[in-house]
Image 1 (cartoon, protein in one colour):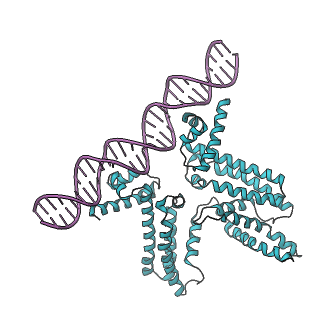
Image 2: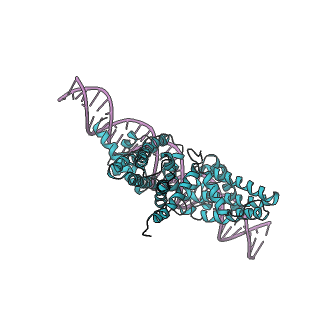
Image 3: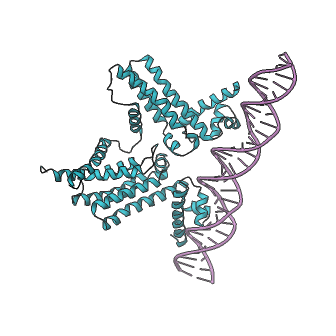
Length: 190
Length: 190
DNA sequence: CTTAATATGGAACAACGTTCCGTTTGTCAA
DNA sequence: TTGACAAACGGAACGTTGTTCCATATTAAG
């Protein structure tokens, strides 16, 4: 790949991420091309369909969220890393309000997103859960899939999505993860 | 209101309902005007914004669903009426997959939809529940809101809705609720 | 430096939502 | 019944979108 092409792709992805976060995923492609300092033709050379650009941005943000897991694992205690990552995941979901309807739209550009979602996010979360479980800080009978789906459900927009309800419910979920730990420590039968 | 105007509004709503159910809510307004046998100008005279037409169709279908409750109540035994209406509600929800994202879109045309939803559907269901409860055919500790929300949640599309994951996650939430209680019981400072 | 492959930019096209206005049509008083 | 006026109608036209196309400019290799 030619150097200028790579540079333009990077600029487009970075600009699109900003614009999508600000104006929403319905922002015109022309605006993105302009702000990135490239022509429309260049944008369409690298992303033949508008949805390809959206999917590429989503994919990149999934990667960033997954990478955050390993970073948090190095800097915090197992349960803290897990709890903080869950909050990070909430932020990821909150800024991607159009994601659910996009995936559900049937556009082939989003076809591979769920698979990538599972491939990157599930192992990342599984690693955090394993660490916390090995350290005896959380219960051992929950899977990464359970937590992933539950948090996603909690982040779904509802009629009153104000006052950080999602964050509080996810924090509650995290506390629920360590409940049985305390139970068994309190209970000599275990 | 003039007779031809009323006729055209009815034709537009009926056609729009069909087209939305077939092509989806993203169908072009021109197609709806053509199939209804009216000009674009006529459509826009009665529905200044595209979203006004969509909202009007949704509103009418909410009314039809609510009206079905009284009809069913007259023709069937209390519990049968309730059960059949719940199925009717499932159908209503299944065909309106774009409803959630439409309401969430922030378009002022959809602003009044949730209120209308509550105003028509909740009393309709409450009446059915009351009848069935008075007849001793169902338990008495459930509200119309409970059933409405529960059915709506059950209708949400999910990648894998198996293995009673919802129940387990709710139990986890409950554990989270008890966590701080145990914490304080463990801590003598309280 | 030459050259061929590649990338670029923006004019141009199609389809959409929406506006505008000359024309037609229903309604009601005379 | 008839006239006249307010109301409704139809569709051409406008602005904005996603997308295509190709003459031009840029890069990398010999």
